[in-house]
Image 1: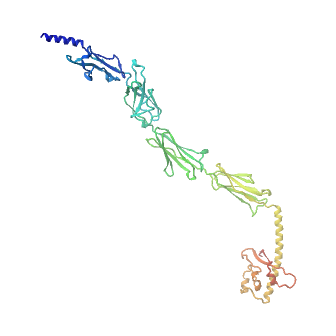
Image 2 (image 1 turned 90 degrees about the horizontal axis):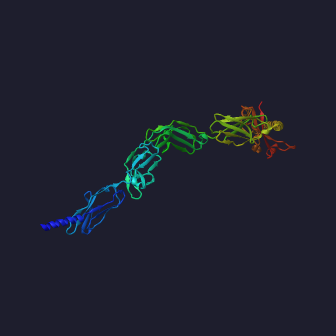
Image 3 (image 1 turned 45 degrees about the vertical axis):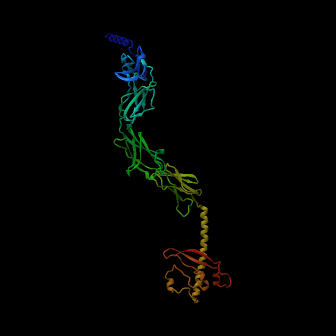
Length: 508
């Protein structure tokens, strides 16, 4: 019994002498390293050492060792102690309990927005708000914003704010932000927030015409501008011609207006047009717009009109200029040798005329020009020769000579008739077998009936070719001048230098 008592006393003294102590830092923040040290008076007796947290074993060592937490997090907070197992004649021992509380470097961020129901097309400002610990105000943070697992903006930034210039319907979704220390890599995420973008229906659709010079001209460019006064999001614009009702084109874009271009307008493009706009709500149609197409004038044609067969001094000359194509009104200018004579207007299209009293100086080239404001066109030059008083005297002299010739021809005709009668009486054979009654039935048709065979190629001596119903008879007469002597008239008729003269003889 004495021996046992001595052993108990020795063990108690040894236990008291070999008590364990757990040493830990007094203040710990997120990201700090934590070193736990388990110490006893006689470490040489320790065979195993273990560290515990909240009665759960963290790690076991076969020798005296420290326990290290590299970067503390909030979940590392708890009650810690260590335990050892001794060698021969020793037993298990537990250290004192040390309570460790890991403090936040900064609070969990909170996502705020200028509006969680923004109007489509409008801006939104996002902010990631947090607060640093008063003991660690020098900690540097960086921020990042997310939508549906997609990074927004340029990614991580030292600014806790993000400006979104325009929000669209497809931007609707879940948003959150994260904050992270630059050095310790402590990252915290905010709660997710829903942002729903509101779309505004379109209103007041209008169609506008844009053309060079303010008027639609054949061959030039035409732009049909469809616009809306209000509305957000992607707008689909479409253009229609009222006559056909079919779509001429369609564009979808994020704007309040769109253009449809016709590179070269044709005359057939004239008509009524309208457009429609739709952004996912009810389509809205514009008013119908009538588009007239102006046609430039074509090259005009100049026509000259005067009383007789030839223009003469004192005549009234009418110059008529007409462009076959061109939108009215058309202004016509008339020129004589590039000198302006005057002008005339055609308010409803077509041609116009200008009258001129002729003088001897009006001979020359005439032309005209047509212009309807879309470009002038000039006609080809038309020459005119004016006959004056000298020409009239020459005509009188020519008429006198002709009448003199007619007189000689009349005498010759009588001689020829007597010659023909003489040969009929003498019994020469007739060139035709028609009875006399037939030859006299029409006094306007005279046929010479008694040529000799040697004169067949000269027949007829004269032939009436005029109609009974006209006042003038045209005759073909052989003029023969018999020289002195007794030459045979048949031989003379065969001469090649015999002349043929045509004349008009007034019927009685």
